[in-house]
Length: 110
Length: 114
Image 1 (cartoon, rainbow over the protein chains, first blue to last red):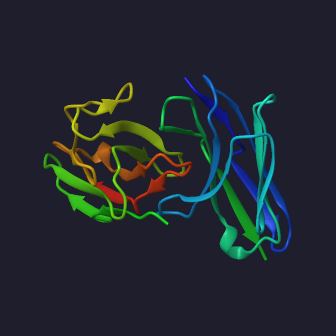
Image 2 (cartoon, chains in turn yellow, brown):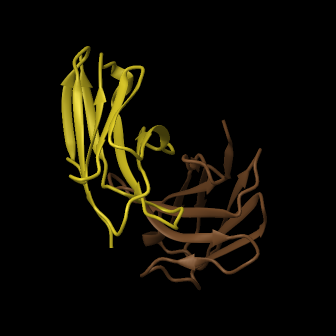
């Protein structure tokens, strides 16, 4: 099976930066995804990494190290609307399905 | 971007009845769709892979006779929860893949069995 770990909860202040770590042990690797999910809603796509390095997209950045089985999602200039669950997911070769971590609930405080 | 539509968004049914949930890819053809279940404060758990024109592939521990999946066309997959019980109450989400890097999710269906 696939093992994907991320912290359960994180709290940060509005305007600050938060880094959500994700470690994975999977039977192969064909990409890592980050999704944002607000309560009662479907996940929305944030980022995709398949090569090592940092991908920046506005206030959100995602980093991948395949040799370490490690990724992080960096949220900058936090806003109240960023309070949500952030899901790390891995795709393995020859398979379209995603294996999800348990999700990290981020709470942004004023 | 690609749109996946899921219907209904909420449904309440009586114990013992069946409920059908539809997942449509609106602007692309999806040979493969996925059905997930999510309990409160938990992550998405893959239930099954829906393959157009063939039988669905179920994950270990998912009862195929209880969760019937039909993928009759390239734009529609349906999940039917048969003989629903209160423990089946959950958030069900579908996703569709068109061979790109991103999976597109439906809006989700909140099922409550009373």
